[in-house]
Length: 96
Image 1 (tube, one colour):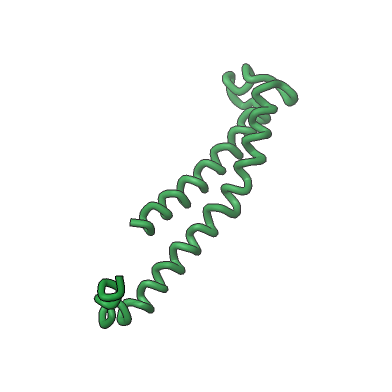
Image 2 (cartoon, helix red, strand yellow):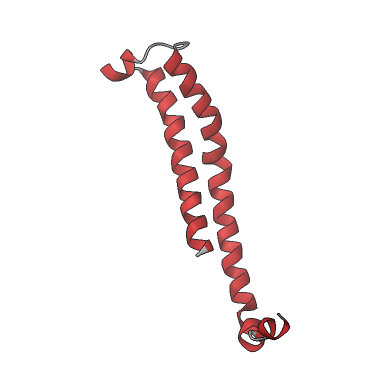
């Protein structure tokens, strides 16, 4: 359950960061009619996109990959401790 939810968080963080980063590039490029209507650099949409880019870069570059490493670490730990839990699994129920 935890591994599945963390995987979704990592994917979401990476995708969100990439989308916010690309939104600023889209506005700055002005490649389409819609991008030109958003305004030049310094306009309110561009300022909002810069803030989104500031938040999106850490999400894209650090949060997503580090969560993937944590997921892999938890999977390896569960495999390492699986024999212990198989032999002593009922020990916790006896204590509590």
